[in-house]
Amino acid sequence: MSSCTLEAVNLSLRRRRDFALTGIDLAVGAGELLVLVGPNGSGKSTLMHCLSGLLTPTDGQVRLDGADLHRLPARARARRVGLLLQRAASAWPVSVRHLVGFGRIPHGDGQGEDAEPDGPAGKAIAHALTAMELNGLADRPVDTLSGGEQARAHLARVLAGEPHVVLADEPVAELDPVHALRVMDLLQRLARSGRAVLAIMHDLSLALRYADRIAVLAEGRLLALDTPDAIAEAGALEAAFGLRFALVRQDGLLGVVPVPPAAAGADEADAPAGVRPDAGGRAGSAPEGRAPRAAP
Image (spheres, rainbow, N blue to C red):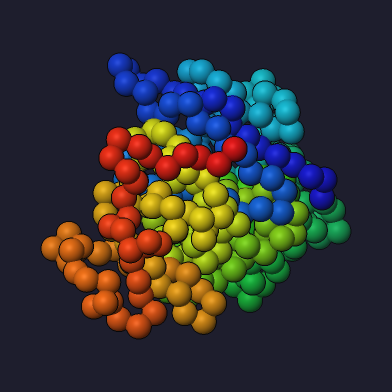
């Protein structure tokens, strides 16, 4: 798969009298899993819809390998950028194989059971089923699957379209820990296969564990863009969420635990083993009136 970069360049989006997004600059490249985090209403889904081409920014651009994404024909755009919407669901009980085949619509070369096994569509569907570990469920109606299985089926549908970029809006929402880990493993594997993968997540510890870089949004602005360790240490999460977070490091893994306001003044010595406040023992928020600066 050829290299690919999707980027937002000084992107802003006005809705009525207010800006939903203001001056966003970020890029995700081939081989990378970039995770967007931020409080509800911070603009994460809006930004993803701009990056997919569903929304047109008021100012700035979305560029795919340097070209203006919004100037590409819709079908060409859909072949290169795959979008997994939040809480994706099937409206009728089609088989998993048929659902995955819907991913071939931008290519117009056959779907589901109608695809020739040795043709491009059939091979892409078979590959997607294998990659998402769904071969044993291919003939099952989608509505009989568990939540985790359905999440993988819809991800397979996106993958069947052979996009260079995968955008996933809350792919592990409402999943139990076992299925959430499985889906994140699969997203990471997609990135390692050469795709550019961008996901929106609310589980901060999962984001810190799996992301190559994390973008922190608040009130439509990009507060920080950096590696998981740098994000956790810099106070960007505290600035975005208005909470103090304790860092947890164990067995080589990094996680965060929100500290209730009533406990925010507890002495660092009271923290249990493996848990500590953010670097420097500070409360974790950025200096008053200043947000952490986004990495270039």
